[in-house]
Length: 404
Image (cartoon, rainbow, N blue to C red; front, side, top):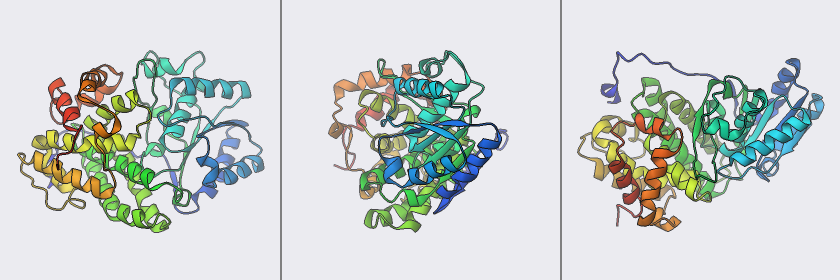
């Protein structure tokens, strides 16, 4: 069905970049990656992580042993928070320079890996700060090698060229996309993810679904981004309920992780639009808001407003989760209600008002959506015109539930 929404005369670049070690036990492949780095002259590396997950998952035990065995010196920056800041990137980069690191390893979810990508740029470009990069005063063409050890099944950052960092003083949360920050080596091991809380599991999985929906419906969507998106959504719809009942089910973790990888590949090709462009101001204003939760909250309204342009594609790719969606362009409101109900069934039960946002915040959110560096690019490829009226409506309607 989605084939009818494709312009076959639009020539597209299909991206399939990093090699990924994937599967239970993949963490043990870190030694191969480090051996290869050593042959390329890397003697010292900085390891970027959050405060605890890199150890509690068991990843660090394997990584530290491999570093020692391969004779690679390391320093650990373990201060990354959710929604990492430009100050954290600059601090980590300075620690890396002082140590003499010539490669970067990120262990964690999107926040540590995106921080690692950003540090890799600063190490390869003397005199450049994180704000220079994220305010687009400097366009990087090179970065030092990046190793990405993924600890969540949601962001897809281990397979793509994107990174996101917050600039606290402006509440901007820009995204960058450069070929030089594709990881040189990536590890996806579902055995490292069994300790994710139920909430984390849900929110990262919904992040992958959002990547897929946006990448399948943008102006630059391709058959590749759509087919990978549909498979991502199918896998999440099948395996997230299983994990919600049994967090230790490794088979379910495996397929949720594969879904996340597909979501990352999908948006590396089809890019993103409304949901991410509008979520970044939310967590820019309230850094404590989990990214995947913010995406889930505004997704129903986004579906409503893009439905007139992409009804066939949405009905098709969402079929594994919501089998009775209409392919009629007038079905946006009904689709929004059904998407919201599915999200609630999966565990996304709050709306913006429950997260502390009010109608008084809407104007500021709209302003951030249109002034934050890079978000205009996302809005420009939305399948319907991203006017301030449409953006305001999405925020306003996301304050409360459609299914009252």
